[in-house]
Amino acid sequence: MLYRPLGKSGLQVSALSFGAWVTFGKQIGDPAARALMHAAYDAGINFFDNAEAYADGQAELVMGAILKKSGWRRSSFLVSSKVFFGCEDDKPNQSGLSRKHVVEACHAALQRLQVDYLDLYYCHRPDPAVPVEETARAMHDLIVQGKVLYWGTSEWSPEQIKAAHAACERLGLHTPVVEQPQYNLFHRSRVEKEYAPLYKSPGLGTTIWSPLASGLLTGKYNAGVPKGSRLNAPGMEWLRDMILQQPGIEQKLAAVPKLAALAAELGTSLPRLAIAWCLKNPHVSTVILGASRVEQLQENLGALDLVEKITPAVMKRLDAISGPVAD
Ligand code: NDP
Image (cartoon, rainbow, N blue to C red; front, side, top):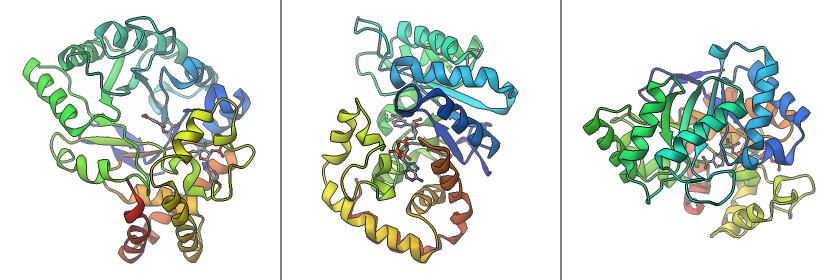
């Protein structure tokens, strides 16, 4: 496993990490989740990603039970939560980024995950209804209390990230160190263009999500929606529509066989090539993998050995195929 600094922070994060979205507490059973976490940890993965909203808190309960039983030293892994969407009812203050919800959601996540502190705590989306100073101070206070070590954002615009930094500097608060954006061959512009000025200063780290575009970049959706896949799982109709009815889906699906042919030429698989391409970007601190089976995780871990094979010539060909169809 390779380890990379999380932006300008002192934290070392494994270049591949593992997340619980739509799998833990939902698509897969607890034994499968345990097998995946152990396979990940045994391979050197040190970061496990979660959120209050994943399976309405169930994903954190499942992960917490696994962490508790694992016997792993707390110093050997990082665990995150994210606040914004809420996981209880729809009453005022049960979601969003007010001081009340940021603090209460942190306490709830600590209980579900059965840990004393979160290594990373993200604002899962921006909340225009709350002054950024209020959210930043709530995060700062949680850090001072030792309940959170680092805070960050997910899918904030560069302007919103800059505003958070400016507020923290003005008020003498801990600054956010990381952003969690989507990044894959089909979704590139935010990480490659919009955030470009932020990598040097303030020194943004990125923990990128959906490196396989929810499975599109495995080729499994090129001939319909196979049984047993994420987009075929009960209750996942919203995601199926979001992925398979997104703008430009026909062009993206048409690009998949071309990418698969390039992978075959390199003697590898499309998932490995797609993940290795993400790793190739020096501004990516870690690629958060998702998997519903250990075999998928094992295959995806092979991306680490592929990075060196992605020469500038291969990059050019990947750009030529994915660039014109990517968001
Ligand atoms: P991917 O895009 O990599 O999708 C993972 C899914 O693809 C798997 O669950 C599996 O689905 C399929 N898959 C994975 N490997 C293979 C393989 N080798 N062959 C065939 N199919 C494969 O990542 P995710 O969308 O899961 O995102 C990763 C993590 O990022 C999440 O767990 C979460 O922690 C984070 N995230 C953060 C978000 C945010 O807003 N901050 C939003 C979304 C995710 P199947 O069961 O169909 O086989």
